[in-house]
Length: 221
Image 1 (tube, one colour):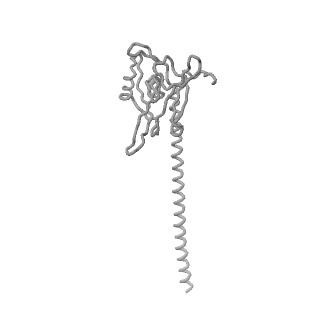
Image 2 (cartoon, helix red, strand yellow):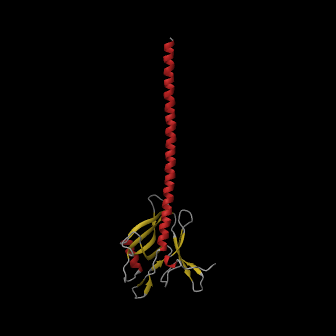
Image 3 (cartoon, rainbow, N blue to C red):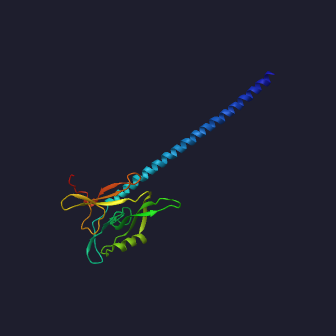
């Protein structure tokens, strides 16, 4: 009788041990799953921050890079190879890591409106378009823009923007006072500073000096 009781008690202990083991396993799995989800969230946030930092750095380098080059237009007039508007910017510069050292390109920073399927609000993206520079080419701005759009290479720098970014250009006036301009068309010299501004939240805001003007000192205001 005692032997049967001992066997029954041992079986009960075994069942309890199995149940506790399963419970501990479930708790451990739940904790591990939660930790993995938390780690994935942190990793995604780090990747997003890294992309944001790299994009900011690339934009800064691009805005710093315009070179002061001149070409004759269709009327034979010498023009600065730089055209700035609120929504786009075209200039001559080198692209590090692309082509031979010292090789120049036409670069265009331009915005494109996008709308995902089923979306109610319009979204925007910032594109970099580029094509090789040719010395002594005739400068025709509309033809150049069309060529960059149709034949140039293209890279998306920023996407899913809630509103378009705006470019502006700092002019040093004859009286020495700087003033921001919305356009830079048919100017004799390069702007002192370039700025690209968004809504101050998801969109970047950068103000940079061109490398060729980095030695300039603006008057105190």
